[in-house]
Image (cartoon, rainbow, N blue to C red; front, side):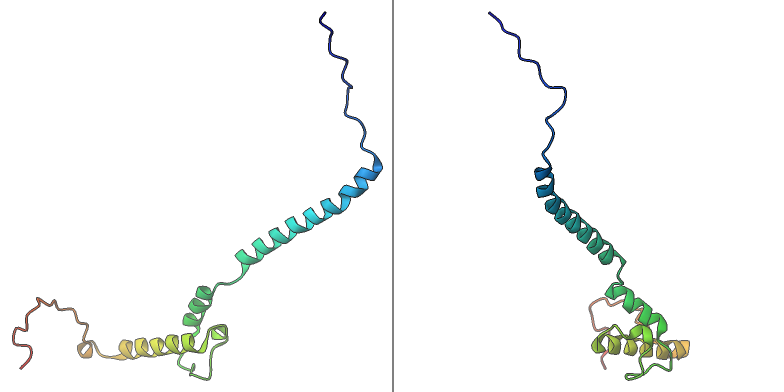
Length: 119
């Protein structure tokens, strides 16, 4: 009554050559897509960010830098960002050159009342 299952082949049937040729373009396209994805990822991580350009520009600012004479490290920055950095550098330099007595560091506390400060 119970019939045993028919014997199974030892290996899968061979793939005809025509099927291999049909898969080749698909495999090539998949390989190209994977390669493009890897390349884009490497490019994204390797490129210099805007913040890194700003840091390099801050280090490159000297007294010879002017609004029109930018250091090479500051070239990637927009004119507005460069002007802001340059003005900040000038202000910091001016503050550093001041005597300690002339600096108003605003290191007092405000208790919220006038206390005779406005006469």
